[in-house]
Amino acid sequence: MGIFTPYKRHANKFNYTPRYYDPDKEERERRRQELRGERLDDSGEYTPGKYIQAKRDARLSRAAEQTSGNGNRMRMWALGVGVMLLFLFIYILIPRIASIVDMATTDNSAQSTQEVREVEEFDPYAPIIIVPNDYQEGDEIEIIE
Image 1 (cartoon, helix red, strand yellow):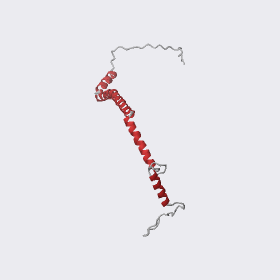
Image 2 (cartoon, helix red, strand yellow):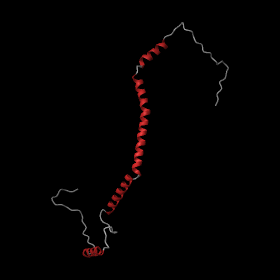
Image 3 (tube, one colour):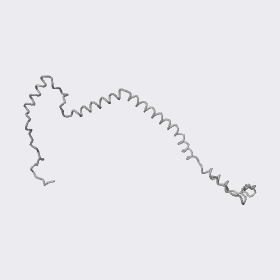
Image 4 (tube, helix red, strand yellow):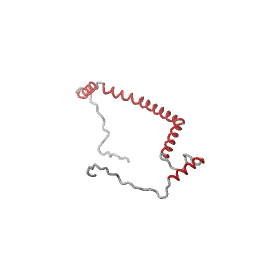
């Protein structure tokens, strides 16, 4: 956000030195604890990456436990049931799709024109069918609710 300069500017840095810190004393204490056998790597002191490594180890052990235990069997059962449902779905669906395709490919136009001709042709010499009317004037229609 500034103008290009040949001089490199550094970010603000703090020059903090602790008042009561003695690195030589810390090193002597560390060596004494190692010689006495008091200091182990798994002490309460934080080391960089300690928590990340612990989480990774827990995740790996959990994954190993799942693959060696019942988790693998449950996956196989679920996969088997899924495959059976898929085959059942195909077994039911394939004949219906085949019938739809068969209906689409058959020649329905010849049948429909023949039916139209039967309806359109009128035979004046054919007997007339009379349907009796059961309704007479004055009868009331009852509505049942």
